[in-house]
Image (cartoon, rainbow, N blue to C red):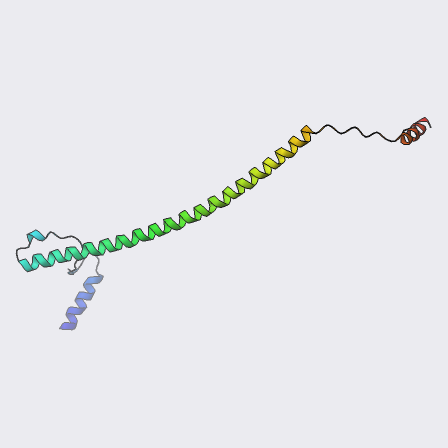
Length: 130
């Protein structure tokens, strides 16, 4: 007979729409003022306290992980800023150096045009005459 009852219960679990009532305690805040017995009220309050402590611990862990990730990201961004600042400084130094060189070239008197030697002029004139 016991096997028959177990078989029917197992079969009932497989049939869609048929559910057996299973007692389960869903964690959460309960309204403890409805309890008349002091022991039950105390137990209810203790359950609420445990639930809140677990929730706070879970949220604390999550927020610490988020803060640690944010701190790591901030440090990485600071390192990137330092690299970019160095590169910008190098570019500015190079630009200033080039500007100084151009200014020196502009301030110096133009070089005299190089004249070919007199012999070269004569030789060129003879070749043109032929």
